[in-house]
Image (cartoon, rainbow, N blue to C red):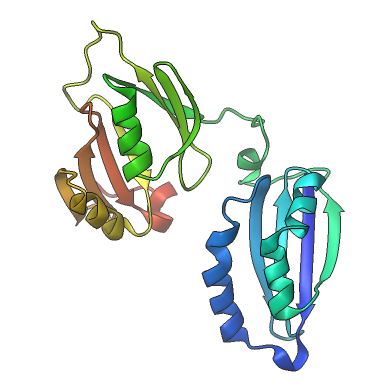
Length: 231
């Protein structure tokens, strides 16, 4: 992997609040950069500096970014930054497995669902929930979640295969702005078993079904995701 750090020494032009807003507003533009593992906006009030720290899968991806219109727009508005590049010989910590392919330890990769009509399921998961298509073949499709690295596969069900009629399995998708997403789904005609609701264990859940009856929960747990819940 490869690291890239760039910093602007802003001096009298430094405005901490404006730079914090800039980071929030520009953040989404970096989410789908090819080869980008992560980007962190950095701000140093004492030194009056602002910039970004990137981790890339390889140096070529960093080169493409430095030649991109996105980077050029930052240079046009703030001037040329100081750029430093580093090799990453090892990466450790709780997030390491998510940044190394394949992961060093056992990791959940994807769920596969069976559908009567793959195109109909694609219209739901891609068109409504925002999953991005990785590959599409006859009777099969694989998608990646709009946030994070999880994937979902859709497989055409055999004619004699019985699809679920109970709560045997439920798929959970987490998003911060759960109410906004559920409002959009409702406006598109998606019926909910339960609209967003605060549950006794402290999470906010909505429940619905996909076109083949697979149960889904869209929820928000926040910092409580990896903590025990009081049920």
